[in-house]
Length: 313
Image 1 (cartoon, rainbow, N blue to C red):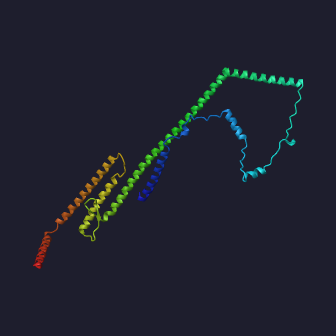
Image 2 (image 1 turned 135 degrees about the vertical axis):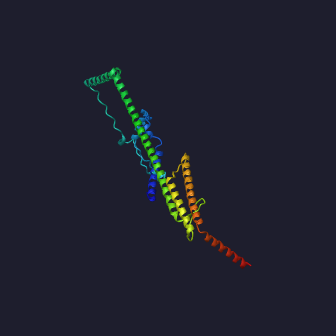
Image 3 (image 1 turned 180 degrees about the vertical axis):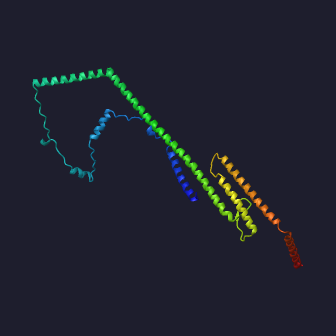
């Protein structure tokens, strides 16, 4: 997988991880409206208060007008009326004539029948309340109320179970996203390091730590051998990079850190051994040169030293 594709997938995973964390922080507690069954009921207004409210609602709300001019001018312009005139006299209600005997008897009979009917209804209501039918009806109403309360509790319990299941699924998804993100970051780090060391194959690495890469101005056999030695070291380093775990563990990751350190130490040891073998091969090649050449070189050096001494004298 390419490095750009890995970076895109890592961005998507980071965005999803942030969304899950934000959602879990918002859902720390279940909503209170679903689980508050015993809500305080609003107290009904008493009869005097209700009458006052009805009276205040029936009264028209007239706007208050303030005079703009002087108070004397307003008083002069105000029209006064006299209610003592004939036109303002209220006509008195005419007196009703006394009913005849037949109408009075009829009225008394109707009033007695109405009072008797009300008394019989009252006695029948008291009898029905004291009978078994009323008692059974009351028990039925209590059972219905209990079933309604139980259904509300069951609804609240189901809603809480659904909330817990949804939260658990989001937590599992968050763990999966975190694990996948760690693996992608680990793979990206391996690709980045392998690419970096692959680009350093054209240079020569120093034996001192940290390793510095350099290139000579003019290449010869010795520098080419050092370059080949660096290539061998880089190949071994890349192999161990592919086996190393670069996962970030903030706490409780001593085991992972020890494994990483041991793998790095092992890689350094193997690369050092490979470098020593290469240097041994180079020294063998140097010692296998003919001795005549070395003697000629020493003679030339002696002649050069004699010439230098003569020039000085």
